[in-house]
Length: 407
Image (cartoon, rainbow, N blue to C red; front, side, top):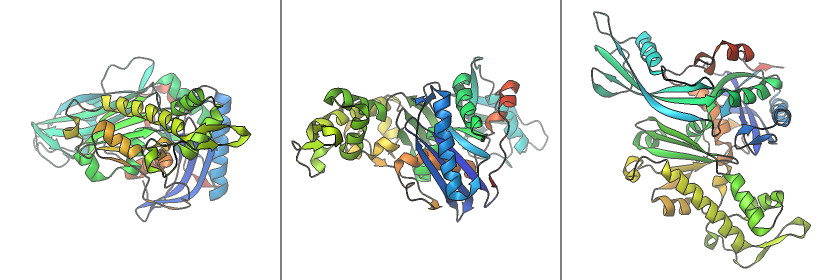
């Protein structure tokens, strides 16, 4: 991507839609020019359930970002999540036929094409094919074989697929507000760009983005992606349990969770028996609120543990667990994570952004920032979603996006 190019991202979440317009390459990061955040309607657990409502939320978010920046969005990088996402690891192998046995960029393309030849059902399409590592004549651990000599080139890839119908519904909403799609990016991959350090990815680290509708997991090792998964349990379930368990309307329960929710109330300096009051005459016990939040978060953390690599996962991911997403703002979540998983735990906040960033240094915006970072940093062997076998009909329905231009 060219330096000082204007780019945009749209994160369509279960609880909010966030649009960011930024100047790429500004001082090695992103100069944010405009941000638009609106409550999300028409989505449930990362999936579109009402196109009209979802489109309206996206339109308002885009309008706010355009108004703040003075720019018009014609294209954006868009995040994808939901239970329809699945992943697997696959290998590809090719021979180096030339007499000099020199690996060239075309050989990388050939070996990646062989790795993409996986059996994909007709109702699913490739979203990402990410090289994890290369081997040359049996020598593993090769990061970039271009310029090296060998007879046989192997690649191990992480292949991510998505349900066509679910992606079509999301893209139809984006296109419906006059914005084209530059690329579709799996949300935990984007979040990892925003909050993980290179040394953590190299050693082995787990990212868990606990959002409103889903918990998105990505495990990195040896500097590349190892495993991804989407869990249908997140902040929505915490709020629902508070509402049901304490007899509150859902919106009131959400307010109570955001204002007072904690999994370690002893660290808050509050009296556990003091009642908490909100508008409309509702009041609940602080202790009861914290017990509900803790119980649900323990469940989420145990589900994350099931995705970790084997019984000896402490050795496999020594960098521990990095939590992000809006629900990771709950007080005491790091301490609870260490108790449940026996791993180092920290909350990840987006970094490397400048400009209009008043609200962005918050875990809730990791995906929104990460979508742009994924785009500007580039990924060896990655292609746009339109080139990953999504089919001619799919490409006709959604054309390639033009750049963001001044209105």
